Image 1 (cartoon, rainbow, N blue to C red):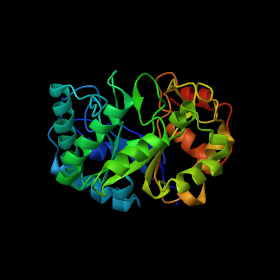
Image 2: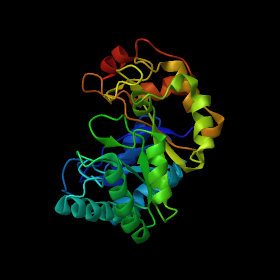
Image 3: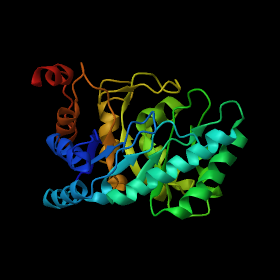
Image 4: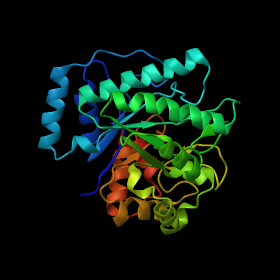
Length: 291
């Protein structure tokens, strides 16, 4: 079974059950969400009743909770060692991991961080030190997302990802590939077998636990990070379909983070297009007209 889904909302009154219902409405077999707004610390108490109802409904619909992903908030930056901000990021990430555990979710995707002028070497060291403090306190698997390399972002190369993983003392660390970010960082997704060979040679392929599937509004190596709908950007439909349906990645959940079309979610039609392996040039118009 293809493990494909999208980013969905997580609302106060419906929580995980509402996230699941939204995912099911798109024909998803997995999904990803934030447990609260990604740009602030406001977090609602989790409802055990709603969580249990969601677990039961997942089983009824053949969705494995081990394939469901939480995304850490953007305001966490483990690379910045400014004392107050650094400790805030560590504490807040620990809190997010506890929320994952309450929800029964094993995987949390994290942007590694930005060194904000401190330099790459110190930024990577800060991330490693923070993860070595956080990981032994949780069962959650933290997945480092590959980044586009805008500004002072770290995680823009596989070498940086490997440096972090090699420095971490614990096993609950992994990788989330992002196709848009990888392309923007300079990795050619049209030659994906060569990219997988590089991952294998670096002993990183077994660490890949999630893939964000996004086209890019910008050409190879642009370092911009602007997502585009599937088949409408520089990566193209054929390259993304090869990635999504690649046999070496068939057990890994794939998550769409493509942009809304005129304020409408495109995920139902994008997932249909992906399952059918046929590009629909009229998809954006259909997304608008479907509403």
